[in-house]
Length: 170
Picture 1 (tube, one colour):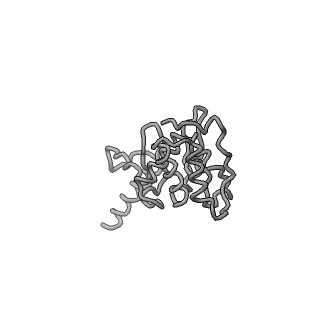
Picture 2 (tube, rainbow, N blue to C red):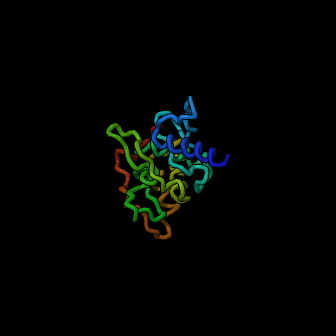
Picture 3 (tube, rainbow, N blue to C red):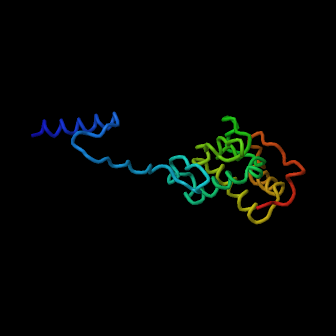
């Protein structure tokens, strides 16, 4: 009896690898949805795996990722102080977004931000200040004051240009 069960199990496993329906099964069952990917908005790609184990509560991390996706005009002027400049990051937006398409929509997420308290905290502060009406220049000054006072190295983030330093737009 055991060899027969093993033979059926082997046949099913082999048929799953080829994509052909197994001889002992007449209907196919769709695979379960991926448990590790989280969709935060219909117009954004799913977040990288690990959101439930992120450095900050998942709802905070999700909000910062969405803010990074929707407001590169803010986060590209915010330096990061976690050491990620060694990874080639230029600003806090690079901690969350790895690539955008020609229209500026996120096509790839950066995993680094999910596991880094500093990245998330900078993104969250920028998001909160932006949502409260602060200008990009005001946000940058607050980030520099909070994180840059001890001479820590940071990303080579450009200064806020005069045209971007005006009133925050939501």
